[in-house]
Image 1 (cartoon, rainbow, N blue to C red):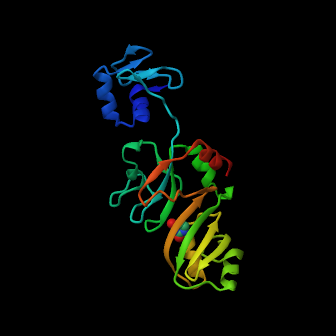
Image 2: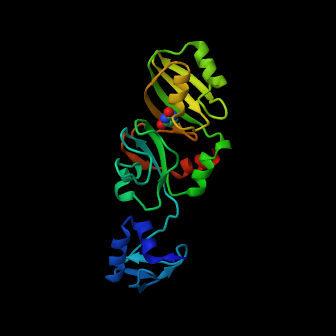
Image 3: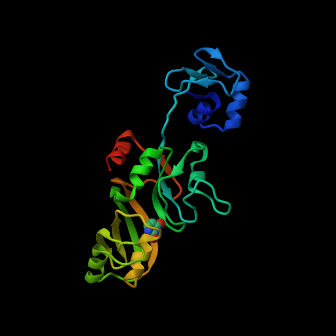
Length: 233
Ligand code: URA
């Protein structure tokens, strides 16, 4: 059971106050009866709720792949900076949050969802979910440095930080895959081998590749098959 105004917000992507106005104006019916009370409780799985005669389908969970641009913070609210959820525009629901964090100056794949249990599974430390980054580095890695990053380097955490894969693309670009997610982990790992990250972009997360058609700041919904891949990750 849930409140009618909350149901409306979460189906038709309106604000709570808009929902209340529409309900009070008599635009909303529940099982064919006009209901004018925003606090009325309905059964979201069973009751037929219509707005101006059109049925509304309740979706408990939503999933968006965002190509996070630089300069935006991975948070739901911030006093100073624009947040990733603000990029959702009319798709923004009050319960959506970023599943994990990318630094303000990092670009790339960030999952935005309201599915708390999935986010928890994906981010749990023992879960071993792969995250691959395209890293622009100051100078090329030697074979020894690359081996060291895969064996584990000291970054001031309890255990050495380890890459599960490193692939050189050219002199100053590598693909680096992590299963851990420590604060500034890629930058601190490269620092540990006397290098420096010039740019960082996450290109894959939990078995999903960033959709190349998304420009920085753009997003799209995940397909059902993609959500399943995340559940299986
Ligand atoms: N590692 C970093 O250093 N920064 C990120 O944003 C993600 C991983």
